Image (cartoon, rainbow, N blue to C red):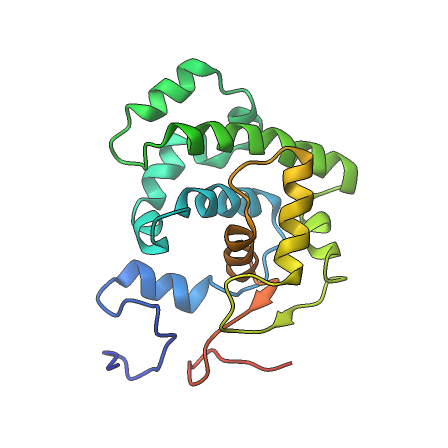
Length: 186
């Protein structure tokens, strides 16, 4: 694939979408420790279920506006009227189950923060703070375990494939493809 800047990237990155290129180059696979960003990515990844990440990414700013910039306490306090407001918002993915899951997951996210001191401590404890280097997978033993635990805690739309994509996005799993200019090895 030919890239305008001459850099080789992962095959999934769309060379015609500047948002996607920036996401690939600056965010995907970069270790995240900030709970606010971890919550945002968790919500966005759950909306990806059955869709492409590019679709979600293209609506990211609209999601931020619609979900009060992913302010955890505000999303935790959403009522049925807020769900209805979001269902009317044509700028986001309007799936009632996913919207309701975002509210439920916000509450569980907050409980995990209380238990572990931060969601970051929780998510990174699975690998003892280490980055896992692997590629070519859609799920793993790690995503299976995290998914099972999040479901047990009451989260929705956190199947192993979604969790795997989330762990890649937040840098717990590093998966840049062979030949990508960002490819690294342990």
